[in-house]
Length: 555
Image 1: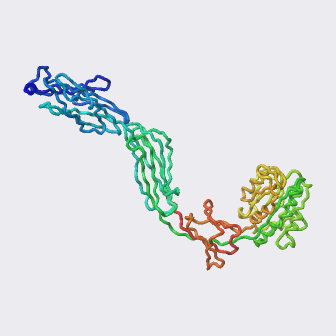
Image 2: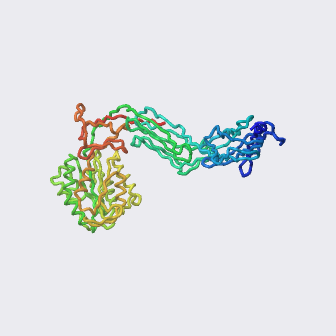
Image 3: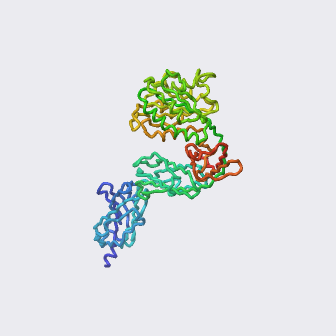
């Protein structure tokens, strides 16, 4: 109407602090209160930022939560105010809640409250403008500034991608990865996982971060990723961190790598085995040993068959655990050799010791007396037994505990040191036992007390520990016979190989080499080629091992 056009329409926008955290913005066309004759909008702000009357400040809000504020629109004109539009310039985190309740026509002095919500999804400092459009002719659009701080954790993984490069096979690479909270709220690390996508363990992760550990803003933790390639195929790993970061609940970092073969190396070994071995049997001759002596005698042929098949230059002697016998070798033929007419029969006679020996079994002392002065001195009772160039094997057979006292009150290690000192190379001395073992035993072969000290001496020299309660003496004697030979079955490599590249060749003349595919294995712990007992190279053979060297660099 002409009256409406003459009086004009006034617009007021207010944020009224009617509730905690709310503020009210006011636009007044005429601050004096006189009836306006023309629209002259003026903003009056009552808020938590009194220095900026055009600002509605939501303050700090944690991501996942929200805060509401009110904006009041009032008509202070004299004609009907028509609200045409409410426009947010940045509505990513702001929301107008109750527009569906709006009556767009406000009579003079009428007002309407608009509810505005801020709900951040990320860490942010955000500003927006709310434009209120109406039929106010002089101020058709009234701006209201909105400001807020969204507080959220924000994960950062550095580096998020890394290439270990083309490494030499075997070279171990390491990478420190920083997991940091670059947000402004606590970051909770729910889980850290690592996938070696190549599936063979070439990439691994190491860290001490606990599930649920919290990183405050600007705090960080470190995980270490190792790359140890074992083949020349490409490798990929992915580190995944699950957290409460609202934008990146699963953050990842990728690692890449590949390897190339290093230098080739050839090791040669000569089989200079010594087929001379002196074998001393120390047998319990106390009252409980009759059956065991018989089993040893009856089954000894299996021992002789193997040592003769190995073309061994052996000497075999028997003494007792009774120190009253002074370590003398038993029998009318006390030293059995390959030239003895009936080695197995002679041994059976020598080991038929009877059961009237001392009940205080002293196997270590019996061996010590047999292999010490005066018995091994020139002209001594056992002088011919211990040969300088031969290996030495001592085998203890007893169903009772060891009770020696001559050296260090029976300490097994002291006796081992003495026996090893009889040879220039201690590795040429091996002790074995057929006893009750660590805990004693009972079985088809009888029963026995523990033989702890005997077992300890066996372990110290790499011998064989067998049960005296096992009725299968053939198996035990066969194993001891193989151990009696002095040919090398283990050849230590000069460098660490890539196992898949190892080639073994054998030559009988040092000129022509034949590839060997069976009868050997690579022992990683020993870094050596170990031949099966029935494939041990003969004396004088040349063993050649060619392989790619495993890289040993680390960074």
